Image 1 (cartoon, one colour):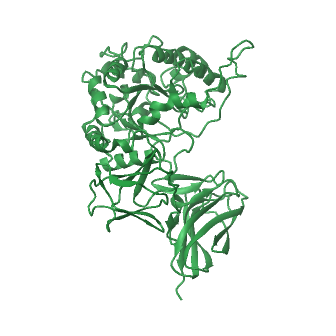
Image 2 (cartoon, helix red, strand yellow):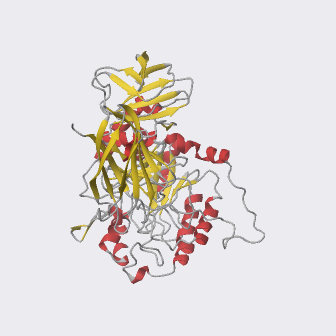
Image 3 (cartoon, one colour):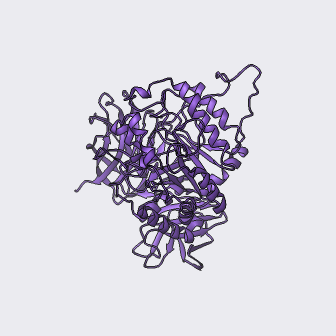
Length: 577
């Protein structure tokens, strides 16, 4: 797995594939796309499975614990092709039970599965005539687990998708490798590899498994995947109506889905279908020594957070060499499934919540006529404040819909009277019913800590992003972009202003102003050493003329470097008299 930047769209017309007489397919209409994506948008929760011959070493090679994910052991240990190809003889996962795997996913409340048909090591987990380096021809197991999974998924009502490493292949001559080849056996022509192995195997996956796959999940494209080559694959994919594929094919094809990896974008991808993929521990493929299991609370709140931003959660399991999903993963998935049995209505088929930034107590999802409040931090005073101003018909705990909760309208929004104790310690769902569209009211911040995550971004380039659980505003390449907050000032008077930001070498010098309530303060961005080196810098003092709610605005005017800054927090603290 690897996080990749967005790719530019390449048109089919004009590529080497096109001929003077070739019919150009009609563009997909919005209605057609919505119909194709409907089941995926409804699902919201899926299981990723990284399973392959790399489960045999389990991250250990020649007695050493190899860094990186278990599925990258060949690359990280620079194992010779001839030595790696000895592993299939030891791969006999006789405890593999397709029905049991699918039952785990179903009990977790997952609606689809995506499994690694071939990862970067080039080993196919299916019967393939294109290469003998596959689980049927090269192992004592002699079975096709994808065929068994396809049957189990049909029986249990789960969609099945296939991950396929189309670009990197460390055991096929010509296959790409991040950082280059380390064995002469890997050398060759990339286009030849693509035409003799990758495309033939994709054809097998697209035709040999009845109604599967519903999804093709590509990964880690390199510069070898030119627009002409990628369009050959796109043409093949388009022969299968209803198929969904992601944005990692390469060659400029945008695919259908954005794929943030191991993180949740602060605002999702408004207007785009997207899916965060994450591990339950730290590895994708099985790794013997990786026991860093995320808690049920973390997994469940991740699911809610993603759904609140309009995305899907593709949560990974890494079965071992015997074919068993590690018990700690199963236990956590069962717990998530128990919550979904009660609260699934607030996840499946929902849309992003109406709030522009995170709520102090949790998250929100919605459906027509319903707003679901997912409360993580239960109010100690029994009053939940929701920043909406439109009329609400009723409020109730989703788990007890017959018991209405009292409500009253306030200046700051809707106040709901809730029980003293949270019914669910991880996430309690309150459902609000309404007949008119939800109108939000300005979320009021504390001027002493105006964070990037709470800011409203005004402009075309500045973007909220998250690193190590902390939100910053980056990609601020347009000096016309600005950020704003609504903040409540307790008193009029002088306030000391400071800002926490980072700025790379050779990108300093951007001019900006902080303004509030008719007053402004000018400043210049200084270099901090890198885009990841944050410093808190005092800017001076500003006068707030009136107590109460006011707009705080941070706006640049000049940008001599690559970007204005990576912004994290603005602080306005009253100056003691």
